[in-house]
Image 1 (cartoon, helix red, strand yellow):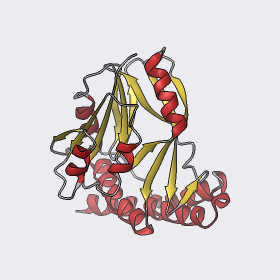
Image 2 (tube, one colour; image 1 turned 90 degrees about the vertical axis):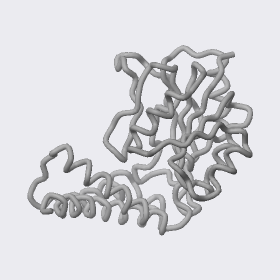
Image 3 (cartoon, rainbow, N blue to C red; image 1 turned 180 degrees about the horizontal axis):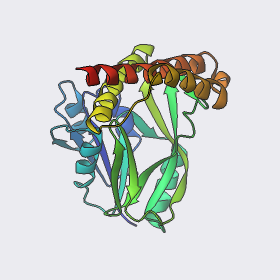
Image 4 (cartoon, one colour; image 1 turned 60 degrees about the vertical axis):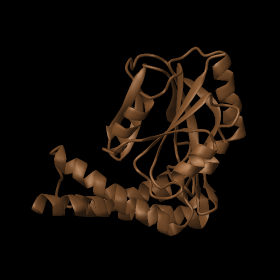
Length: 251
C-alpha cells in the first residue's frame, strides 16, 4: 500500500480544523499543517490530532500551498483547505487509490455548505478539483486568491474519485461578506500588478452578467433562499473587484 501525505494550510482555523482532521482518520499516513502564525487555538488542535505543525510566513495562497506540498514525505499527496473534510464515500475512494493507483492526478467534487444548506447549483457544484496527486507531478498555479493544481504534463489523463469534499466555509452570512472583502482585495491587487486591462463599464456589466450566470444559467433558483443570497453576493463581489481595481489604478 502506498503511503499518503495530507497537506493543509491554516491561519486562525480553530473553528474548522478539527472537522477536517477528524475526517482523515484511517486515511492519512501523515498530516502536515503549514500555518501562517495563527493567534487562536489552531496549533493546539492540530497537535491534539497528531499533525505535524509547521509555521511559515504567508506570501500568497499559491505560494503557501506549493511550499506546503514540498514538505510531504510520501509518494501520494492530498491537499485540503482547513474548512474542508472528506465524506465517507471519498474516504473509501482515497483508500482504494492507496492500494492501486494508475494516474498521476485524481479529481474529486466539492460540495459547499452555506449556513446549513448544501448547495447543489449556482455554479458551486460539482466544483471539481484536482486534489490528489503523485509527488513531483505538478504544482499550484492560477491567480491569487484562486489557486488551481495542474500536472506538469498536461497531456496525461487524470482519474476521478467518487465522493465529495465537504466544504464548510460559510457558517454565517457574515463569513461570506468577510471572504468577499478579503478575496476582492487580493484579486484587485493581482489584476493591477499584472497590468491586465479593464474596459469601460466593466464595473457595472460584470456584476449583471455574474448574477444571470449564477441564478439562471447555473440554476441558483433551485437552491432556494441560499441560491438567491449567493447569486446577489457573487454579483456584488464582481462589482467590488472592479471598483477596487479602478481605485488602485487611480492611486
